[in-house]
Amino acid sequence: MSSYLEANARERLHAVLDAGSFTEFLPPELRIVSPHLGQLDAPVSFDDGIAIGAARLFGEPVLVAAQEGGFMGGAVGEVHGAKLTGLLQRALLDRPYAVLLLLESGGVRLHEANAGLIAVSEVMRALLDVRTAGIPVIALVGGSNGCFGGMGIVACCANAIVMSEEGRLAMSGPEVIETANGVEEFDSRDRALVWRTTGGKHRYLLGDCQLLVADHSDAFRQAALDLAQECHANAGEIALTLEALEAEQHFLQDRVDAFGAAADPLDIWQKIGIADAANLPMLEADAFVAATAQLRRRP
Image (cartoon, rainbow, N blue to C red; front, side, top):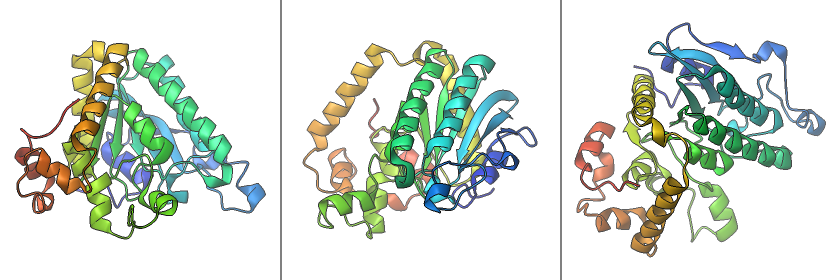
């Protein structure tokens, strides 16, 4: 089984999807690049750091996007965001079984910040339109750049998120927090702190992602199908309702009330009943899930 973490965007697409089924929209040979980067003498990519298209997942038709972390950390610019928005809008016409978002992004590009921010807002609106139409959106997070900033919000707008231990998910990245508030607030060089704060195990334990899997493309592939099937089995819950939003808000408020004073994620783990919090992170994903089955918080 191949490592999801070490693969690039197209390698992930070919590993997660049915063999030979991926048809790319707006491929690199069309050379649709950001209009802003060239003006700043910045390097461009002929796909603007994202591959989108149609494919099959265990025989089911899906639309899919994969961000390329190797180009500007998967950051969102105007064309990058427009491709993702267009894919979601096409889902309303094609009615696929699901939309899969293979996310790896540090957020919005500073080079084209306003265009990127607008693009992220358009992506979120389009994603919610897809959910309203009864089409589940599944986010896969396991790349080395994590899923931060606006794309972190996009991930949380999806029906479900699957992460590996190596994946990271947050609004602000460690370097951003350290720059704004100092190293005393968050030491971005402390890799153990970074991963136990934003990593897949912590996000799974607190209920921010629905499935935690090993760093294998096959595991992500199976998890994507399982989550899509679960969504279709509860079809009435695909769209975001006011009741679900209020329940999520209560869940988050309860979490703040319970853990707001914690200085370290390990303090949170101890509070929910994990006595050996320092050693539990050493478990493999499946063993971690089994060990925390009765302790994991759920929205």
